[in-house]
Structures are given as structure tokens and as C-alpha cells.
Amino acid sequence: MKQLARESMRRFTSSLLTLHWTRCASSKLAVLFALTASVSACTSETHHFDEATLDADLKAAQKTANVVGLLAEVQTPDGNVRARAGVAELGSNDPVPWDAVFRVASTTKTFTSVVVLQLVGEGKLSLEDSVDKWLPGVVSGNGNDGAKITIRQLLQHTSGLFDYVMDSELQQAYVEDFERVCQDATPPEGLVAYGLKHAPLFEPGTRWAYSNTNYVLLEMAIQKITGRSWADEVRQRIIGRLGLLHTYAMGFDPKLPGPHAHSYFMIPNVPPIDATECSTMHTADSALISSTADLNAFFKALVRGELLRPQELAEMQKTVEAPDDQFPNGRYGLGLQWTPLSCGGGYWHHAGDSPTGFHTRTGVTADGRRSVVISMSSTVDFLKTNAATAALTDHALCDAQE
Image (tube, rainbow, N blue to C red):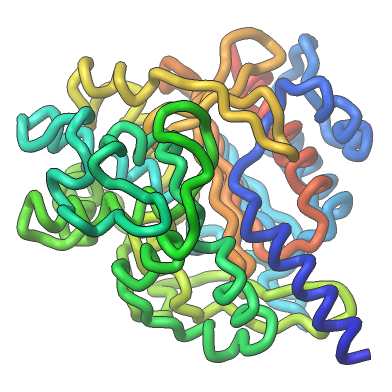
């Protein structure tokens, strides 16, 4: 039984650590949408979108994907709509708090990209600068060469660098000693070292492959360029500028500073492990804590040009094909993803999935008039989760149109 549990955990961890975002337009996902028939899936039909509609969609998603708790907020020119489903904590009937904060995981990458692009706009670096220019000698060994990789390629995941979270030593630690890993305090240089143990996946600029190593290197470059920490730059340049009252860069502090749901490390055949207060994510690839209201405000401000000059925003929105086994036909810019909508046009977003059980889905229309944020705590069925949240997002952004 112990061996079965360990093998289940190993397979689950591998699946979780490679999961990064959700898509809606793929024909392959059309099959998955059938799993969420009670959720209004991608369709050209329009319906009146209100709290009851969102509530029904969210409850269907919670039931279909077996998520512990969900919270969603849709913002439109006509006002905000919120809904929640499931529970805040296993063994309790308490709902997820309306103003809950949560770990946004890889959605952090969009914040990091904004900081880098602001520095570009200020003339402090160029997207075509090599990594070696700012971090000489850091990316080396095993065929890795920082002189051949640009800042743009780090932002766009076209560097070819191995994703440190896929390192077998690190994955084994999650499997065999999660309680210790939960309080991990490995500095950025240590995380990068996990990635550089491996040969590059391809020559820089020739392909696309998601790698958290890229954004940890960007954190190190930001500190080198500004003389301030990545967290300080995010606080000054984005959090303070937009007045985001519930967005935090906590570093190694595992506490969640406000009302929150509980998250769980969940795998088949093993009792759930409460991982709510884990510090495994403390770098620029995944460190931020936020709320549905703050993330909606951030993404709307971003696409409206309130954080970047037109030149840098245009660079951020230049996308490349980003094929993925689970979500084909996607496109990725500089820390920002584009997905078509069934009703025409598309939306910008970045998802986040934490091994500690928090999952974030976002979406904002190109004009910044409508947005949606979904926070989930703990699920073991990611295909159904992504199908349900992709359908909900498409429904919310299409049906909220005037």
C-alpha cells in the first residue's frame, strides 16, 4: 500500500508540476467540454449574464472537477458579479470567504514581465540583451550558455532552459518528504542550479517550452539592474501604483495575510495534506498572493495601457505558438497568453497552479472592459478542471458583452 501511494504521488506530482494554464479554442478541448454540460460551454449564443448564471456555472465546475472550494469574480461595465462554491476547509461547511486571498502561483509571471518591460521603457535594459550581460557566467555548464539567450527569450519561454520544477531530485523531495519541502527556503540561485543540471531542451529561439527557470533568472536580473529586490520592485511599480490592497510578495513567510480557504496537497490513495501555509513558492515565477478583485484590477489596467507604454505593451502582446500536450494551439507573449473566444476576438490571461493546492484562472478582453478571475483550492482532476474553467471563462467574457 505504501508503494502504491508513493507511485500515485509521483505520477500526480509530475502531472501537477507540468500544468501551467488553460485554453478554450482547441478542437481537442471540445471533447472535454462535454464533461461540463451543465456549464455553458463555448458557444456563439448569447445569454443574460448575472449572479445566478455565474453561480450555476461555478457549482457545475465544482461538482464536475471535484474541487474543494472555488471563488469567482466577473467584472463588466455594468458591475461586478461574484459567486462561490464548495467549502473553505475539508470537514467544515464554511464557504470560501468573499474577500479571500490565495497564492496565484504562475500568474505571478505577468507581474514580473511588467517590471522587466517597465525597465525596458526606462532604457535600463533591452529585450535583446543577453542573460550574460546582466548575470555573467550564471547560465553555464551542460551546454547552457547565457551569452546565447536574451531577456526576450526568458520572458517568452523560448530560451530552451530546463524547467527546474521538473528536476528528478526536486520531484522526489515532494514525493518523499513533502512536509520538509513545504517550508523550503532555497534561494533563486539554488533553484536555477536545479535547471542548469540539465542540458538545454533546444537552441534558444528555435522553439517554445514553458520553464520556471526563466523567471527566476529574471528575478536575479531585476535585482542586478535596480539594486532592489524583485519583491520591492513589484510593490513599488505595480501594487502601490494600482492600490492593490490584497496583493503581497511574502518571500519565505508562509502565512496568508487575510481570510482564505485551505489548500491541500491531494493525490490518489493518500489522505489530503493541508498545505495552506507552505513557502515553496517565493520567487518571481510564482510568489505572489492576491485576491479576485486585485487580479481583475491588475489585468484590466495592464491591457488598458496603465502600466506600460504602448511600445512595451505591444512587445508583451507579440505571441508565438505555444503548443502543449494538454492545451494545444495556444499562443504566448511576454508573460501573457492569448486565447480565442467563441464569440469572436479573444482574451489575455495567465494561469497559475501550485503544488500546494491553489489554482488561479484569469481572463480579460482586449479592450479591458470585461474580466474574470477564478480561484480554486485543491483538485486532482486537471483535465476536467481546465475544461470547466475554460468553459466558464468563455461564458463569462462572451455573455457579459453588451
